[in-house]
Length: 201
Length: 266
Image 1 (cartoon, rainbow over the protein chains, first blue to last red):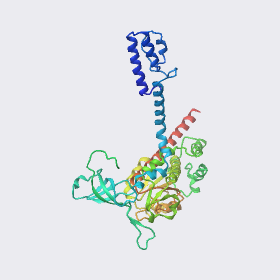
Image 2: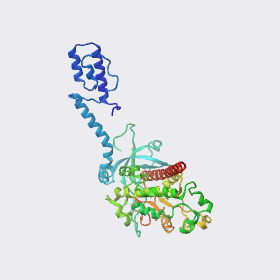
Image 3: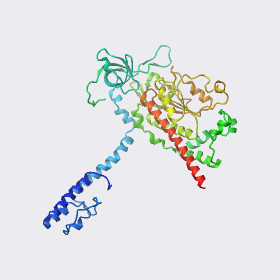
Image 4: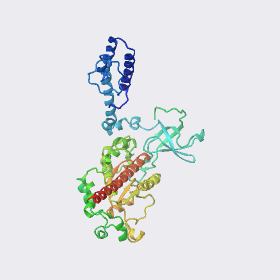
């Protein structure tokens, strides 16, 4: 706690500088007392109250003994609350979100039926004219390299797809279970041209 | 409860003394080979302490901190195949079916994965031979490199019929069989159950297997219901098993060093 650098320390440092300047200027008693009252973060400020023109506090601001008032009190309260939130939030985010709520909020479920939905995929493998594109579902899709801008479709390029099916599988005559191709089906629409990070994934 | 179950399973995986061959169906190499894996310096009492101490804790290697439901979710472990490909015996592990795609219940997966990783860690701690198996050609390199990085073995090629059941004839007399087999996909390339699962059950070798919604989980000792088709999920499994095995081996070395120090000082 005493070692962290935050707005509280900055404010304390600022007050320290202002106070040193004020005492150094040898102003009248009223101003000095007012200065002391308004900056109670100094624990050793009581020694300077009677008017000793000593050096500014050498040590870093120690935890105050006097109760704070006014802006300083409100600031410290808010700083503590924010620190507590930051400490608690990382753990609670993963604990409290259950699998069911994660699933409900996932893009896959929010999307609904996959037929004719637009998605963004990334090419992770190229074999000649075949592009293997992963768009975040269980399977990847394989598309033929289009004639237009063919050389731009390399490993790592992001492309737009129109999804048709998330898994190509069907029950054939006489079979006990479906025969699956372990692939999704999508139509390649084009490259994502802009260099800026798109908000939608 | 888990420690009792583990103790029974590990009676045979104790220190590899030559005369223990006749108590187990495990085939060892020559007597010299069997002796090299024995811990030389410590007395039998200290040996027992090293071997029995981890069995008293439910999570001795602290494997629950390696993963969370969120990690599994982001690695797409919950996605299953279509309804038509579903295996009847996988129905208890499914959360539901959404637009004909089965969703695997990650709450159950977390428990099963925890048990499987714990068992793997205990086997690795006791110096067991672990065989990683996968017939998915897409991930064969990944599985082989994982095995290399944790100092264990992998088999990602065509499985010859008598590999486990006919080992002394095929590979020479006195071959040590694996003590654990980890299947990253329990199906082979024609969507039938991998022969290794049945053969491991015949040879009393425990198996850990990732079972997707179209797999049969019955013969797998520690099934892990989860996706075995997406690269992200297989990479997650490989990473978790590698970290588990390395952690267990490091722990063993640490315990032996500690024992060596305490016995030297006393």
